[in-house]
Image: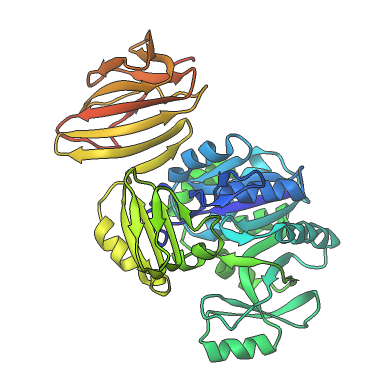
Length: 440
C-alpha cells in the first residue's frame, strides 16, 4: 500500500514552539513505547509501520519542512517537495505523479492520502489498511474514511452517507455548520470529514491530467507555481459520483490548538519548570535554559522557546493566531531542525548573531559560503573536522575556526558535536548562502 502523508501547516496555532520551519507535527511532546519523546510525524511513521511494515510512505510537503523530516525520519520515507503552497489538490496530484512517473508504481496500486497531524491509536491505521481492500473491490472510484462524531462540532466538514452501514455510498457533503445544524447531520449518521482518501493511482493521475495541462511529474513540478489553489475536496471529492465512505469509531483528535494538545501530550511539564500545589490542569513546555515557576494557575498552558513566551487560558488558545501574526511579522524563526542536527539563535543584534548548533555524529552541514558575512565557529563539545576552501582541519572542544565572507566551508561530526557560531556583518540573512560541491 502507498500512503501519501500531507505535511503542511504555517506554525501559528502552537506558537512559540511551532513556526514556519518547525510546524506542529515536528514538536516532540509524545512518547514512544520506550519512553523517548517523539513528534507527531515520528509517531505516525511508527504507527503505520507497526500496522504494515511494507507500506510505502511519501511525505508531501514544502521546502521549509524537508530538513525537519530528514532530521526526524532520516531516509525512511520519500519526500515529494512542493515548490510553493497550492492547497491539497495540487499537492496530492504532484505526489501521485511522483509515484507513477518517478517511483514507477503501477496504475492499479492503492494509494491512501492521510494528514500527518491527527492524534490516533493504532486502530486508525488498521482502518486505513482496510481501505486498500475496498479500493481493490473496484466498487467506487474514491473511498473515504469518515470519523464517527463525538459531539455536534462546528469545526469540521461533514460526510452524509446513504446508510449507517460500516461502508456506505455517499449522499452529499456539508460545510462546517452551526451546532444546531450539526445535530441534524448526526441524526442522519453523518461523519466528520478527516481528509483521508483512497483510490487507484491511475484514477488520480488521470484526474490530474483532466484538470491540469502537463506531461509527467517533472513537467508538473515546473508548472506548479501556475496552478490554481484548490482543495482536493472541491476539485475531486465533491464532484465524484462513484464514491463510498467507511466509518471509523476509534480514537481521533485534532490537536490544532494548545487546548487539544494539552489533552494528549505525554507529560504535564516538559523542561525546566515547577508548579505549586494550587495549580490545577496546567501544562508547561519550556525550551529555554531558564526556569519557569507557576503559582495558583488553573486551566492554563505556558510555553516558552527562543521565539517567545505564551501564557494562555486553554479555552482562549484557539484565538491566538491573529496575535501571533502581529508579533511575529517579518521575524525569522530562532529554532530549526536540519537534516544534520539543530540550531538555535541565542543572541541577535545589529551587526551580529550568535547561534548554538548541534551536529549529529556522522553528519555534516552543506558545503557553502556567504557573501555578506564572516563567521566564527567555537567547538563546545565533540570532535570532527572542518573544510574551508577545500582544506581540512581537525577540530575538538575549545578550537576556533574563522571563515571570511566568500570562503566555502562545512563541518563534519565524527562524534556528536555542539558549537557556537557567531555571524558578523551589516546584513545577516538566511538567504545569503551559496552552495558548492564537495565529496565527503
